[in-house]
Length: 367
Image (cartoon, rainbow, N blue to C red; front, side, top):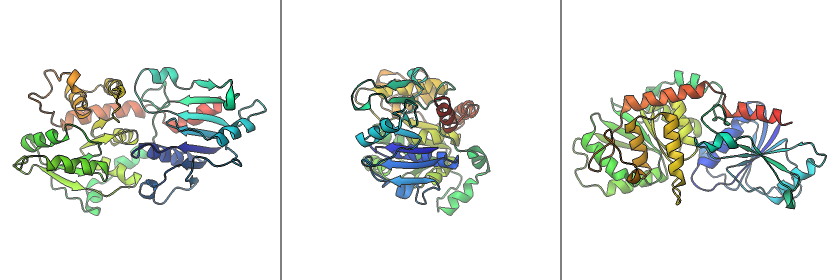
């Protein structure tokens, strides 16, 4: 089939990152993909070599002569240009859906995902009259759209040699625990770093990703007292931007991954290491329900739940309880306990089909 994926880049890299992974995996499955985006700048480092079968177009409005493929995907509610809507309506005039319009939604573990997944949204009036849009929700359970997972990904993970990858990139690792850091600006970042420096039972090296995370860590460090890390237990390596495959290997290399947004939490689950997810903060606190639903699905132990609430600045209305920190401290990383939780969750996901497999079957059923 021929696919047109439309991605409006709002902020950061999750939207274009997920759209690129979807396009690349579809192409690997023998599909022909055009990716339309208003900002392809991140792809220059995220996917520097492109991918066979994927053509990237730097616009969301392909113009009046646009001829849609068999499937049009609007990623994360991206607006579809009138020319695209008109083209879908034109090829579907005979009553048969020659072109199917799928809206790929945001990732969540909330209960509405399963009840809303796969529903049609017919339009009865206006420019979109007669066009039907299908809602496709990624998710963590078999009654949702699943998660992106490339064929053979876990085999690659199993054969990965951490030391060789770190050495090739000049990242020192002399018996330290490794934690990757991809974050926005956690309000408690400085407090957590200070607590780690004073209480860490093992030396920890933070591998800080380029851009916003690097700036956040540098600001936090500048505000800490001079002797916050008296034993030198916390060390830092600041990274350049990484291509997607390299980012995956960064997550495979680490004992704990701090991730954010849409793409990296899924990749962290596949990595199987301990993880802490920072959701995109929303002014109406909508991310609170999303986080709690994820922690429930994850079957997170109390300490990991406490860390997530604190990291997302949501702990003021959710006391830590007897297993959490005291006197304003944040939990230390429970390397083994948190990893065990993620490994069990990953196995539940591996027992399910991946997103592309489910999407292709879904479209076959809607012919």
